[in-house]
Image 1 (cartoon, rainbow, N blue to C red):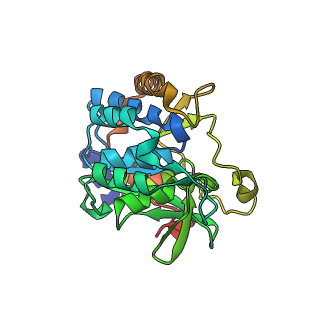
Image 2: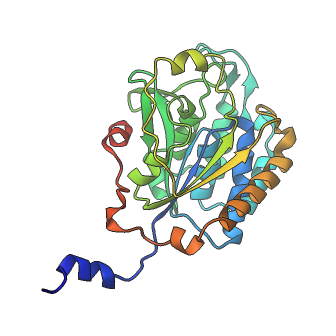
Amino acid sequence: MGRSTAATTAEHRPNRRAQLGLVLSSGAARGTAHAGALLALQERGIAPQVIVGTSAGALVGGLYAAGMSPELIVERLASLTWSDIGRPRPTRALALIETTALHSTLDWMLGRKAIEDLPRRFGAVATDVRTRSAVLLDHGDATTAILASIAVPGVFPAVRTDGRTLVDGVLTSPVPVWAAHHLGATRTIAVRLRPQAPAGARATVQRKVLTPAEEVTPDLDVVIDTEGYASWSARDADRLIALGYETTLEALDRVDVDELLTEPPLTCGCATDDGAARVAS
């Protein structure tokens, strides 16, 4: 007997380009290393179609998804000052810094666009205070989504949108690979910073009562060692960008990039698992 139709079809199916997702982790000020990772990907001709991020990763990823080049992202991050972010002023939301200035800065950088109008598919991950779970923000105002993802408890005020109160996604999903799959990615590159930067004065207590999102293994895991670099100051920005660039190039040199950019077999199980789907909005 001849081989099955399914086997014959699989054998003759041409290799297709994967829908590549880039996942950028949390990291506070150390997140400027993500800009270096983008420079390295660009140098190798790798252009992800899906971008997701948590906290600092959502900020850098959002700028990239909005069409900003890695070089311009580096320039914008290097020029940021505290006056572009906010003023140290305790608020009724129990936050140390009032973020009206940051809202205006992001509106300017992102062109006041909705996420669904960005050139690249984008999602920012935040934490829902009521449900204590991760939330994927993949539609609506891009600035609001990023502000929610970076709302470090005790530092920046929580963001209220669509009837939810949202804070920093680092509490439930610091490296949201699941979110990239939820948005259609079939291959993923995750850029994570270690050690993970502190997420605010109340983070340790909150993590004990929160529901972490399902962890999904990326196809390429780029781990950037940021030990000893400043978490809440831009003084190391240039060094972090260089570190992110060099570490990402080294990681790419260790893999078959053609395979990374090729659609995986249908049996790979890349669909988002039920746990991730439940926390997506």
